[in-house]
Image (cartoon, rainbow, N blue to C red):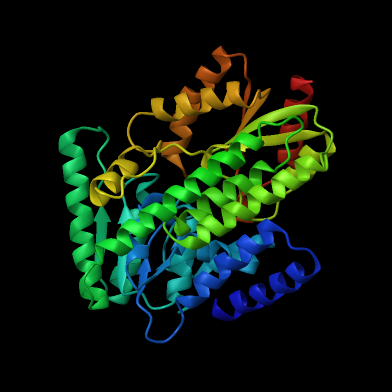
Length: 399
């Protein structure tokens, strides 16, 4: 993994010398931060950045390492050979009914590809498989696994419950680093997060332009892989670069022809697929991705634990699916979309159950929704032919 990431950093640096694209810079930083976890005398915290208020981690001298993102950034996955990396887990009896993300993580552990982890953090929202995988990894390395439990309801009692967990996690981080939490550093992390949030709101406002000046796939990847950077000044820098690039594209009218505008949810495949090629061929723009939305209010630096608890509680994937429905319905209006595409993986039972409720609500607004089956990183469960047939039929129906 370390060697692969070093190669990717070098390649992206060469690309940036030729053309300074925001997405290449962002991707380079994702790899570079993952590499830092391999450094000597580094304290590493395993975490899923999109499902934990990581602003707390950036207040400590630790390297947050996103197991899911890092393992799926391996070149074999992106080039459509992800299954070869999953075989060690499958050979140990882990079924293909387990998410390919998690089979990949377990395999990387068994193959000694991961950096050492000093603390394993996980949460109970988005999926249960993530939490169990983190527990398996923690047991494998003999480390403690902490489950961040976020209940479905928002109330004074639940805010207190979640904020007390964050205080306990801060205590564990103090033990790992040997340093007490500096409250001023935590406040600085929250201020940085707020600035980055404001920049992302500007980005999202610009993408309402017709034709759309950005690719919703990039928005989705920034939302998921870039979630690890909330609270770091790097997230501010990356968001500013995307904002400047989109402004420049808009000013110079660098648009592709746009016949249909699509809302995408909930995430995009990591492996290379034919999806973008087909959409471009038929002049279809993904104008917004659910993962790229700003769904939380500005954080309160004077009450850091409570405000981070509320951010976790307000995540659309916590509690009732109504939160997601309201967000997506607002997107339909704000971005004037003609249709929606749901990328589904067979093993993601929670998400697939939500889809039918979401789709029926969008249908009431006159927005048809395509359920596009595939897999995030296991090419054995993705069919380019079926994908093309489904997408073309959907586009023809929209036309």
